Image 1 (spheres, one colour):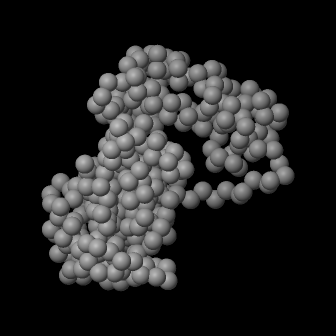
Image 2: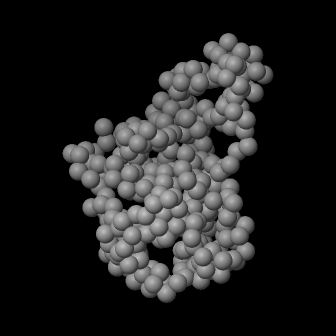
Image 3: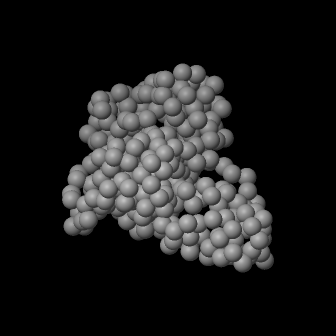
Length: 323
């Protein structure tokens, strides 16, 4: 069982603190056995003051971090010298120094400051909440901050933007560890979207659609059921009983993307699912996902995630035989 240790610092934000336990705790194998154990600690094993108006009782001290496989540092609103001076207090510095080599390090939101101050992010690509990105880059000049993405996976060090992006990052880790089937089951259990691309923009300034106008939701649901068929902009607009111009405008307002890009993203996701769960040849996966040819699938998959179908299958396919 993969062991996850979550470090709660004073000023901890309760929502993000609860994400690892909720997401990793919901991951089960085919027999219902948990795939992760999640334990929360504070520096001294005592209560920590939350960013909200209450304290949190914690049963373990930071020596726990030397025994786990993944360390998660959620955000705190009381980082003090860490955020202001790039300096770790002694007890926190000692706790992180005791982490075993090869341990996976994960930071959510402003938790990235902690890893940066510990010297773990030098020369690495990272992200944090978009409000903190410029400050983080100025303070830690050797770190490559990407302010516009949801999360960054740099192998043994992963960082995310704020709040819900922590959910995206934990789902990404589950997917990386156990494949999309387990990650999708966790997402379904937690009633969250199963996947958002890490490179998706953190903040899209987009108005909420006027409730009096027609929605494209029914057409999007229909399109997902017909991805293997030709889906043209004119056909989608006709299904929604709208002109192409009106449909395109409302689609972008609701989704933040053009219909064509959205359809391609859905087809890539479907192809990934087939690559993980079937023995189908690449050409058949391409046909069933709506790309037509293996060449088209290879191009789109490489554009989306930078790998070929065969490489993706070897990396993400669960060890047991595919259906």
